[in-house]
Image (cartoon, rainbow, N blue to C red; front, side, top):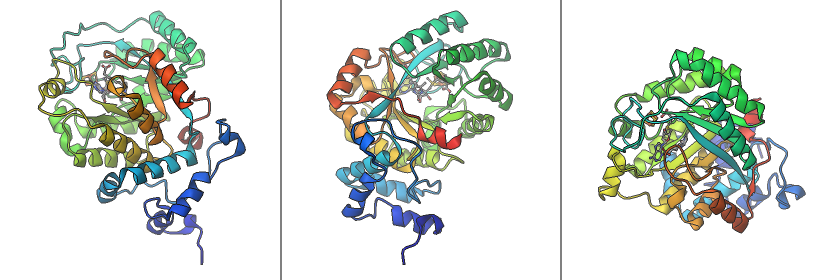
Length: 383
Ligand code: SAM
Ligand code: DTB
Ligand code: SF4
């Protein structure tokens, strides 16, 4: 008897649809699932597509995630791409622009960050930018084709005196027809509510690494405090952007633990940035990488991390974030194949370099990629 997977207990349902146990012929059918003739032409898809039962799980075990990482690379990529195509337009990549609205002098001790007051990166601390200057930068980002504008501040948390200006930035950027995102450190419930009311679509706050590796990287803010901020953001109705960094000298098991922490949150983040450490001289992690105490993340391992993120969180936008500047075109192409569908454009991230619009346009042309015009599935499903 064939049972509707939606009616099965989650474990059995997962098995029926688990791409890791599917026969190749079922996988091939899966690849075609949801394909319309317009999709074949690279057009936008109606969304959300029906979920294959069992894909949207929040009960992943570390053993299962470890087993995904251990799979033959071709099988892992094939399955990640199959899942990707069920929920996302395969040839569209979302473009976001970052702006550092408050640079440097941060009281936190994140070991990777140029903006920490503990780092000797030589970065000059600046005040919060004024609203007019932020809106001018947003207008330029829009003219350059960005759909989302992300504003970042080097703070432990925003102060009460900054909230009016932050809300004015959000509503001004939103009025330009851009999606809005901010990353300002920890948020109290009332702050999250105010930003949401001003029109903030996304809040970025990363878990960064596994719970057990976290203490090696940051001591001034706990994992639990990060989870609390994520809960406050979620409760305010904003979409959650939450990911982390690889290539900080962590083990494969830490990458398993990091993705496990994300995929077992009360709801999957709508956006998952995967950053590769940009080694900044004067930071603890940058210096240890530059001194050869740990290697830069292996390209294939980075692609595996993206693929596992896509399989665990099918509807999320998986963002290929920091570190793209030093990635080959082929590695970036593999990341897109593995399910990454969002990047930061422009020649600067917050304080470090980025691939730049020219390089991105050339890569998109070579790969036949288009800037994203379709809606994000997790956002649509949430509304
Ligand atoms: N101050 C805010 C906070 O940390 O909550 C927001 C800004 S912070 C720069 C945002 C994220 O950028 C960090 O959580 C980290 O994942 C990433 N990041 C910072 N420096 C990086 C580096 N050198 N290489 C790669 N990613 C980095
Ligand atoms: C995220 O996870 N990556 C972006 C965004 N969130 C704000 C920031 C990357 C910063 C890279 C280091 C820098 O430019 O300072
Ligand atoms: Fe501050 Fe954010 Fe950098 Fe940590 S990552 S030092 S909180 S700006």
